[in-house]
Amino acid sequence: MPRFTATPLLLALAAGAPLAALEVADDTVKLGLGLYMQVRAEVIQAEDSAGDAWNATEGMAGQNDTADMYLRRFRPIFKGSYQDTWLFSLGLAADNWGRTNSSNGLTLDHGWLGAKYDAFGWKHQTSWGKQQSDFNSAGARTAACLFPTQRPTAMMVNMNALGVCHTAKLDTVTVSLTAMSNVGDDSATPTTEGEGLFYAARVEWNGTGDFKNTKWQESYVGAEGKGITIAAELGTNINDKVADADVITAGVQPGSIDTLVYGIEALLHMDALTALVEYRAMSRSGGLDSGSEADDAKSSAIVVQAGYAFPLSGGTVLEAAARFAKVDLITDIDGDTANYGVAPTGFTAMPDNAGSGRIIDLGVNWYIKGHNNKMGLMVELWEGEEPATGDNPSATAIRLQHQLTF
Image (cartoon, rainbow, N blue to C red):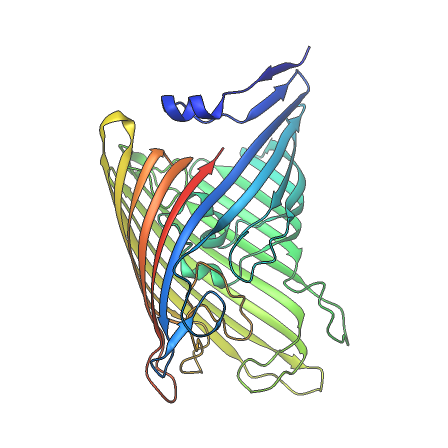
């Protein structure tokens, strides 16, 4: 007979018990219901290069709203296993619902089938379908972020697409391999040849001895212990058909591009302290449908961040956090990000990322039950690159966010 279990959410929150998803299971099948939800309030004051007010939410000149409140992420998840070996997960998404200029629609976040197994002394998991690649942890592991916003390196190739992902673990070493339909695989631009694929590899070393990490996360919420994780990754997006293949030269010029991106991260955990340093670089090259070569474009970013946790009575934790980032999305163009939140050609604007320039984030987190139930308050100070004419655009953003995930 199947058994039916559920931990009432309100009782779990009140008692501080681990959050449990609704679950139905028997000896063959396990089915579970999960949720990943972030509710956010946001205030942004921005100026363009002329010193005039810029409405960052709507992407136009003028004053911003007094405040914007929206669902940064809303993702109900249906997941489970068959005979303990075969895995599946289906998740819907209504991200940014209620934010100005959002479509307020419900889409498929992921849907994949997979299997876990042991081979050659390693523990393996292979999945196939639409899914988030483990490549680029800034975009792949958003539930364990130090701040309400992702690290700005999430803009530099963050893949959620159809494909195959494979992870292999041996003691403290994890290797992740990815092959996916590339960015813009369903592009409607004129084609002279077929689309390529996105390939990536990521290697993590999670320390040893007294400095062995059990898992990767941007904050360990003051947990006792020490650990270090060093990760390196390399990805390439081959023959991607795009509407504008030359981001350097003015005008829209369709063609295909090849993108190469690599990154390295070092994560340190020492009791109340969690610190991370990351460097990421990217290059784009390709050809135009007209037969000409596109100008090469390069990007780079460095991020340094840290959080220090203070346990409180009742089992909750308070954490102070700080981050510095220097981002240059197109190194050959001064002031490639004209205004806060306006992405240059070849990049997708994201609510969490300002664009090229210098970013300072300061914040405080209240962990009610670790990353499963937490609130974060942050201030972002952004100064864009100096353009050819005018002054540096700038912005100050304040965000309050509540996250619940199980």
